[in-house]
Amino acid sequence: MSEDIFRQLQEQLDQYSVGFPATESGVEMEILKRLFNEEEADMYLHMSMMLETPESVAGRLKQEPAQVALRLEEMAEKGLLFRVRKGDEAKYGAAPFVVGIYEYQLKTMDAGMARLFEDYFEDAVTQQLFQHVVPMRTVPVNKSIGVSWNVAPYEDAREIVKSKDRLAVANCICRVQQGLLEHHCEKPMEVCFMAGSHGEYYVGRGMGRWVSQEEALEILNKCEEAGLVCQPFNTVNPGGMCNCCGDCCNQLRTLKKHPRPAEMVVTNHYAVVDDDLCVGCEICLDRCQIDAITMGDDGTALVDLDRCIGCGLCVTTCDTEAMTLAPKSPEDRREPPAKAQLMMMELAQKRGKSLIPLAVMKGA
Image (cartoon, rainbow, N blue to C red; front, top):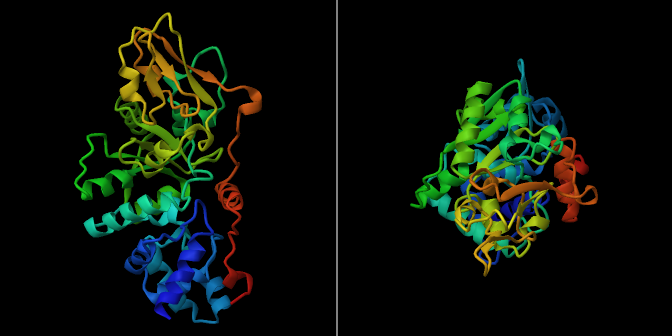
């Protein structure tokens, strides 16, 4: 029974977002057994990503609402379910593995769990985690965008920050994990933004703190200076935005192994080099987190457009202004989904999956 329910749990998690595929090593089972007990695994199997009240879940399970409410709250506090509170009412929904359960272990991850996650990400890359699509997109910071062309607000990191009434900031889960594995990244740590219900969840669980818009913009400036790639959730009105480095971020590390990262990331920009202005300083090589820039035989920078994800980090430190960021052609531009739920549906559908658990569809 025990092994069976955890395999069902793995298969259900694989339905959501970028998935949670099984691996040859079976490390995913070790992760699930560390995170869930059998009762929690069974409860998760009867949840969907649609937010529900404890009364709704209890009615479906034919159990006492008070007991169900207690279990759902305990699971939300463990980072196994997402929770939204409005006044005295709380609603809960199944969290995907990424972005979700992995990120929600910010407070509780230890060295053993960090190693299991690392082994899983290494194994799962060969099982197509992140291979179809990724849940984040890349946007430039305002000062890397040319003044001669218009940019939608959702394509500018500073405008995304300015559009939020309230923002929380949290430590980067990827850098926390790598630190536990004794890889001590020198990049800033407190760099992940959450807004709306995501912010409430992070602050409510003690994983983040509220910041003013001024402080958020200051943090964003420090991220750009440190060479971090700005990656908001892939929606028009993103509920979160990470600032990532290529040596810690699991998504960027996976993309670096792909022969054509530009195909995997929703980005509407690409870097261009003016050979006449390039002096071959090679600063852009260090700034690029995705290995998209090399030096040509003539000593000037070359941008591999199959790899460039349009973050603009190479632009902001180019003293000769040889590097610029250009907009993609109208036919190559991609607009993000309007809402997070649509993004999750799109990610699942591209992998041939359903967001609705079988137990929920049957009304079990």
